[in-house]
Image 1 (cartoon, each protein chain N blue to C red):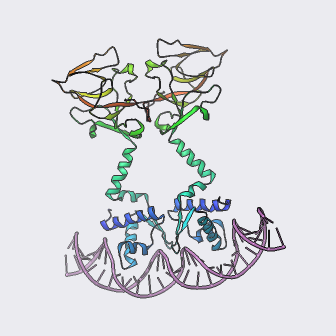
Image 2 (cartoon, protein in one colour; image 1 turned 90 degrees about the horizontal axis):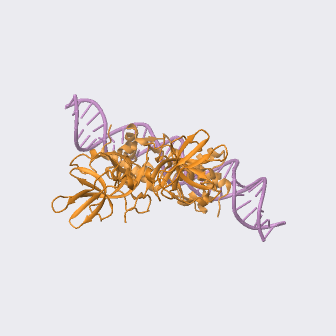
Image 3 (cartoon, each protein chain N blue to C red; image 1 turned 180 degrees about the vertical axis):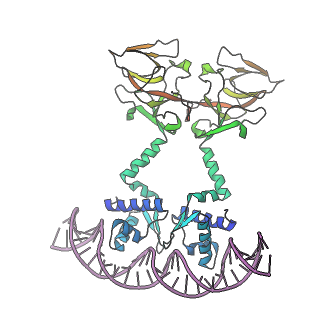
Length: 222
Length: 222
DNA sequence: AGAGGCACTGTACGGATATACAGTTCCCTC
DNA sequence: GAGGGAACTGTATATCCGTACAGTGCCTCT
């Protein structure tokens, strides 16, 4: 059964008190925090929370309130969001084939998440892109490598960029000559792509900030 | 000032009680746990721990015992070891220049630790080696890259190995032809190294299982 | 219209808890 | 050999704390 809004507030307070004071609160402290005028108000809430299986009360023991694992299911939305963000900070989405039109980090494009913090790279990586093809071979970027990408539309001449050209994602070295942008491969078998910025648009998705090969389960040695 | 052995025991108990019961103990519970016959024994120890700055006592509050950050400095050796191991499991030593004669993972060879779990790679990596030189360029292994290495003396023909030749560490592709071992570079500017196993010894330090470029603070984009 | 859950107020009390005071023993130091 | 800290015993007490009992107002079912 679900918690009432008030019960969720009480549960949040129990968690906060424990985290900040190192000790669960007494009934009196709950009363003070919520402005109750009777200890029974606190007691009733605790009993309700115990009945719903999110806490355990130890009879007779002072501060004998124990938050059970299941209490995490009833985190306030703010706390849930914070936790999800914290978890995401420790992992990066892996983008594989990119669907035409869709934003690069939209759900269908994300294959999985790799347990690596974005600030492992500098500037920080926002996602990993699975490299397709050999066009950047001579820059040491091989087919199947995971390219760490810092998401930004700003790029300077000479940087290795992830660009979107007619709904296709490509990794190239950027060269700017006035109104002409060149996307240079690092492989003589491929030709540079020339974009006239006054007529066509070039979307820079981000900058290459790192590279991982053979990471997270894809075996490099057989 | 340091804790006495007895005080360290009490501190350990405080930590364990908090972790297992979710609540700091009362004086009476300390008495019961240690077989004291007087609550003052517990009180005295708590006062001593407070004087030494490892806990905080909140006057009047039941179970008002707070373990301070500094208490971690006085962890029992067993707990300290467990923590250190847990920390090591989540990071890899980075080996730079290798001193002649010394084992590859000996202290002076380890530059720093990189916050990446060994089992990020498969088979698991035991250390990272900073690549020097361009001899494996055409395999996408560039100068300055961090090579993830699985430490093992066993290698098969065709694998990329980390070998030790006359006190020098080198990354090459291994080719075995009977009693002859060849270490092949991936760059036409370099020559293969041929080792006659019947006369010379070849020490295989490990296998390349992954690669990281631009990781952990070394900027790839400027 | 009655039952029941939720969210409280108000009062009371016994046992749990922190804590003071007065000692003892052992060991180390000056 | 006096002093002092560590590690306790033993007793006492004010107050903290959990908890029972008796209500009230409101809302939602059925």
